[in-house]
Length: 212
Image 1 (cartoon, rainbow, N blue to C red):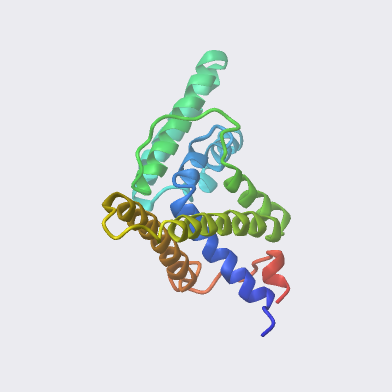
Image 2: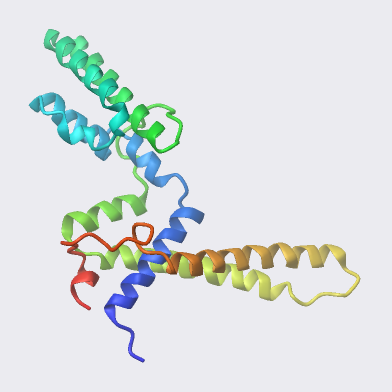
């Protein structure tokens, strides 16, 4: 049966979910910590425009009062200009990122310098900007297949050993467990939709989503 673009897109998405969980843990969180990440970028725009609404999308409704208060303080202090302006901006960025991460159940360990975005996250952002999913899908596919082949080879190459060689048997079991867990993760992710069983939002413009 000929594989459609839609089915390939589904597999790419599943692979992305697994790779994010197994190989790139923390990439998304680190992305939000950076000075050139989307959270701080929205904060900069809000401070310049005076419109806080886009920033509020990054925090829970219950946390809005804290962010509004921090924003009002920053707007007031930064009017002094110079070092005071820089300190006010930095304080607002730190508060916003801390609250955002707390909403995800993640600790805040400080803002990271610009340019510390993981390649996968940068590619994901670029896909959204360009409307083309294929380059990201290719990256995910290559990394996932490499991980699968690597774990398979480790399990396959250690499967034969002397019956009384306990250490060799342990090495095989360790490789087998890693291999099977990786396969299980890929399979389970392939059964899940993008938003916990909910249909993808309308208006998706990814290349693979458009051509199926």
